[in-house]
Image (cartoon, rainbow, N blue to C red):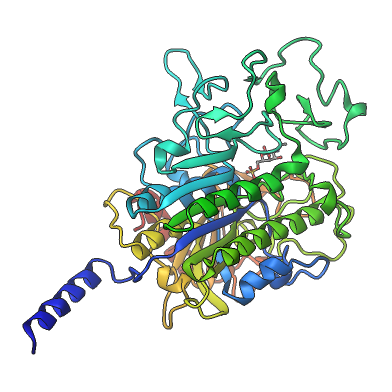
Length: 518
Ligand code: NG6
Ligand code: CA
């Protein structure tokens, strides 16, 4: 045999050992993360009360996962875990971030963005952040964002080249955009102040000026009013910088198109982080009234439009065959999340969590099992996959695909499931997944194959019924469900299967104690 061939053969074999799942020409990556979108909220997952033609097309051209999850049933921990590949319960202050939270992911932490940047990608996050901005406080200084100065650290310090953000959530103050390190369009003569307390006695709020609101609140959300809607937290100033809720989706699309256009000739990673369908649900006027489900349904249609626009841009730039799109959600559905927007009254037969129980805030399947679609034209054979995959796996999977190795202490709960994400024959997803509710609450779900263990750290747990406002109910500390036979987790069979319960309890303990699972 030709010596050069032999050497080449050895080299290929050696490279394959380093990274068996590296792909020849790694694709661009666009992660579209929806907010509060449930398993049953889109038509390709069974919704009939509304249609989502663009998300359906994505699924028809790619892989639709029936066991695709996010790792938590609230936003901040899922996003933390998605970017870092670490379970959020391992780190303090990873629960729902307040308006003035400092940066939760510290500079130097390995993230999907830092991994792909190292692999030569241009990287951007556009849309909802909700992972804090600014430095940790010291000596009585609370830290957090310096809204009138440099918002550092933030995404740019953990691997993103650029960002265009809704800094917290649309129901939390302030309603301004952040571009890279600054609030966009801020007039220094009208500084932005953000706080937990009323800035003055006569500051108008959702309580004092309730009759002026264009959408009334139902719980919380009764502090500073902007755009006729009262929010969580107080703020003053920054008027020139404030956005209209109705325009957010258009802005994410505009900025994303610009980023993709600018990087059409080089690899890029875009985290398209939609605020839809989080409250306050105020879709653009052209989507209002489009469904029978009220603004919650109309916001789903708006989200679907965004997905269509991203696909259109990729087609126009001839990049659909060079781009992996991952569509997912940050937690399951909720109907009344603090505003009276008709979500409960207009729900009809629509099942936001599909066949599952629970939703946002819960460790029932509805809290974390969500739409999950991958598309890479000409590379992924279209179909449906029952493999277990999670947003927390994107870090290790994308590292593998782009040929990047991970330090032992990085992305410690992220598994390389790239073969499953790409629908390779015989490819396996995870064999287990820990699900959490919010931050380090001590409440977990552990799915292992067909079984699911619930563990409630505190004596109470969130009500599992999506249709009702939250309530606390006493529940046993441990419950066991056979989710293959009982997907709605209605019958606790822990007394019938003590051996399974013992095995899963031990596995859960180990997952927590080991500090890592990879
Ligand atoms: C809760 C808010 C809820 C929502 C959630 C965060 C109240 C009563 N409830 O505290 O409306 O903002 O936080 O949602 O204020 S998440 O999807 O960003 O995690
Ligand atoms: Ca959310």
